[in-house]
Each structure stands twice: as structure tokens, then as C-alpha cells.
Image (cartoon, rainbow over all chains, first blue to last red; front, side):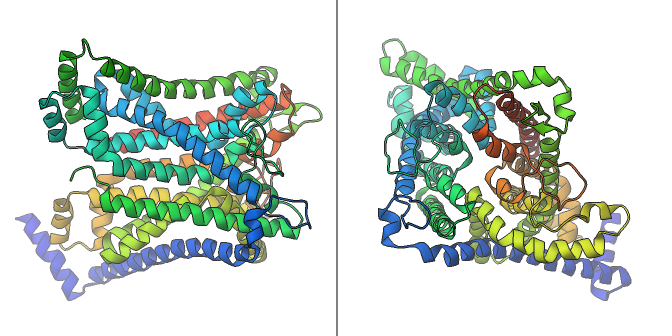
Length: 298
Length: 324
């Protein structure tokens, strides 16, 4: 009864336009406008970053950027060693991290009869997802670089793999949870052993989502700088040797952007443009792909 | 949760039936367990390496390490206070700006935007989250820092610098770099994370709750403030903590714009440093097994502890918020 009165009263006030209703209407409009402005500002910032990268980075784009290694200031050169180094370390980290990450994701989703330890692994893996990446760099430095006595591409790869794994764990687990129970039950009913059900049925059903996760993880680690500073260090010369210091785009950008030479700063912008385009393109592709054939339940 | 544990039970029962002679089953189980447990090993390794590496600093300076403002490689006197202060201040500044913006964008996306437009803008916001942090650093250094120096800081010093109380925050030479600029860049970096958590929560609220409030004649804002926000408070807190965790450990963007000076003061315009930026800059210059290296590792351990606490809170809030 009283609720009805309130309802009628509120609706009346709103329509008739008493002082309170006017105030409520003004607040409503104000919030709408503020939220719209917030959205516009955030979009503006994204476009400002992209615009800056394109206008400043495009000037340095030429064939020699991709063909020549980094060189001393004033003597031209390109980013070939950094591009190749980045690709090599990122892809190897993905190669190293994908099986471990997927197996861990399977462990978390399918081995819950292991009890408390499963939720502990899940907790730790979630933590690792957000460990500051520079600490991973420190860790790999002390465990790999210091004992070996020199920086190396392998150490950089390892650091990136540590950042790569938890992302894959997360998506694998999430996607396996989406696989309908009926599908597993059907497989079990046919007499398939547990591991065959997981590998041939569940993973197959979830592969779109898992691939997307791997792609997003790849995009994430390919822009990481901090963990590479102390591990693969960077290399001004052409080197694809994993046992030696190795150049990478982010570290080169870091070193060049802070330098006092105009052509190095230009090269840093070009590198920044390249890496951002690669990362954003991977992201867009992954999301598009997920929306097309991602969900496990069909 | 319940669903997955029952499936697991059934699996265990089924796999138990043909476990005897099935080598594949055993091998697969061993592999999955090894992979899962290796995560624990890596995490334990990170903690052990940081704590044991920083032990020399902790034992040399004692608890005073955390409160000392010193950072002098020549006299071998190191303290954590300045970089902890910088880390916390930049994070707080980041949240002050990021939370309202993230909320605004999430509210607009969920309640006001036409669905087609909302999808595109949501995508754009997610792309902002994907931009590598070094790019934020460069953009901040070449675009935001001059802007801050020429416009924001000059104006703020002139008009706010003399206000008693808060004036303290806005004094100092307008370098453009400093705690405020770093906080702003961090805000831009964490807004997408907070925003996407908020948008997810706002979408997931049962329609009945909102409909009943609308039925009483509430405006959209009133529904948000009196129904949606109280209902989703914990998940929203979890999202904010998630952003906090990101801001605490962010390295490259901050290193570019914070000015890197070991100073502790009230002014937001003054250059400072954070734990992460200090490690990034000083680590390459510190020789093996020196006291400085140990101090940097000790700082790393402190950063680890701070981010752990934040993330544990975030997880707790998110889990509770989702169970609601």
C-alpha cells in the first residue's frame, strides 16, 4: 500500500515538475553529460597516442628500417636486429609457455579431485598474472644471468615465458569450464579414458578460446620491456644467438627514446609505431576470431 | 564451483575404472600435475630470490631501511622511504583520476550507449589496455610532459600554490615531470582495467532489481546509485584493487615521466621515483653482490609484498562480489 503511494508520488512529481523533480532531472542530465565526457576523453587519449605514433613514427619507415641493424648515431641503420630479436624471444617464450600453461589450465579445470592444492595453484597463478614484470626480470637475472656470467636471449625468453604462462592458464581453465558436461559424458559413455576425453573432446571444443588467449598473451609479452632490461639486455649488432645478449624492439625503444640524438629518437618512434601496430592488430584479430568461433558450447 | 567438482568426481570414478593398465592416463596426470606445480616453484623462486637477495640490506639497515630517506651509493647508505612514498603517491593519484573516468565510461557503455556503438567503444577501451607500457612512457615524455609544464603546472602554481593547506601540493618549478604526471599516465593505463570490471558487473546485475526501481519512477542515475552500486559494491572494489595492483608495479611508463630523483616532499610537481622505476634505472649500474644490489632486491621484495596484499584483497572482493 505505502509502496504504491511512493510509486505514484514519485511518478507524479517527475511528470508535474515539482522542485524535487527538477533537481532530480538536472542531476540525471548532469551525470549523463559527465559520463559522455568521460567516454570522449578516454577515446581521445587512445587516438592521441595512435596519432602521435603515426605522425612521428611514419617518417622513419623505410625499407632500410627492416633490412639494417641498429647503428651509431648519425649513420643511419634500421631496426632489423631488434625486430628479429623481439620475434625470436617472443615466439620461443610462447613455444615454451603454451604447453606448460595449457597443462596447468587442464590441471586446474579437470583435476579438482586433487583438493586444496588445485585452488592453491589457481591462487598462485592468479598472483603471477599480476606480479610486476620488473620483478620477473630481477628473478631471471639472479637465477640465470648471474650464474651464467652474461646476458642472453635465452634469459629474456625465460622471463617472457613466465609472464606468458599465467595468461594461458587462465584462458585454458575458463574455456574448459565452458565445455558442456553432456559432451564429456558422451565421450565417457563410449569408453574413452579420461585423458582422451580432455585432449580429443574438451580441448578440441575449447580450442578457439584457447587460441585467442594465446594470441592475447603473445601480444602482451611482445610489448614487455622491463623484464628484458636485465635479461637479454639488448644488442647493437645483428645476433640471433640465444646464448648472447639479444636486441628487442621495446628495449631498443627505451634506449633510443631517452637518447640525445635526433635520429635515434626518430628510430624509437618508428619502433614504437611498429610494435603498437603489431600488438593492436593481434588483439583485434584475436577478439574478432573469438567472437566468430570462440565459445566452446556450440 | 559445485558443478565442476561433481564432474571431477565422476571423472575420477570413471578414470579409476580403467586406471590400472592405462599408461596414457597416468602419464597425462603426471604431466598436468608437474605443470601445475611448476607454477608454485616459479613463484616460490621469485619470493626466495628477492628476500634472500635483499637480506643483506635488511640486516644492515634493520627496520630503519623502510623509514630511511637516504639513497647514497657513495656512502653505502640506502633507504626505501622515498621510493615507497613515490609508489604510493603515484598510485593514489592514478586512482583519483582513473576511478571516476572508469565509472563514467562503464556507466555510459552499459546504460546509455546504443549497442552497436557500445561494442566499438568497448573494443577501443580494451585496445587502450593493450598498448605496451613503453609506448605510454614515450607518449607521456614527449606529449604529456611538455603539456603539463607549459599549461597545467604554470596555472596550478599561480592559482593554487598560495591556497593555504592544499597549496603545498602545487608548489615547485614546473618541470612537467614528476609525481602528478606519472599518476596521470598511470591513470590512463589502469582506467581500461577498472572500466571493464565495472562494465561486466553492471551488466550482470539481475534485470528484476533494476526494473523494480525504474518502476518506482527512479531515474537512471538513481537506479545506479541506490540499486546497482550497493549490489555490486564488492566487485567494483575488486576491480579498483586490480587497477591498483597494475599501477603499483608499472615500470616503463613511470620511468620516463617521473623525473627520477630521490626526493620526498609534498609537491606533486616535484620529480620523484617509485620502487619499480628505481630498480629499472639503478639495477644495471649496480655491481654483483654489492650492498646497493641487495637494497634494490629488498625494494623488490617490498613491492612484491605490497602488490600481493592488493591482489589478495582484489581477489577476495571479486569472489565475494560474484557470489552475491
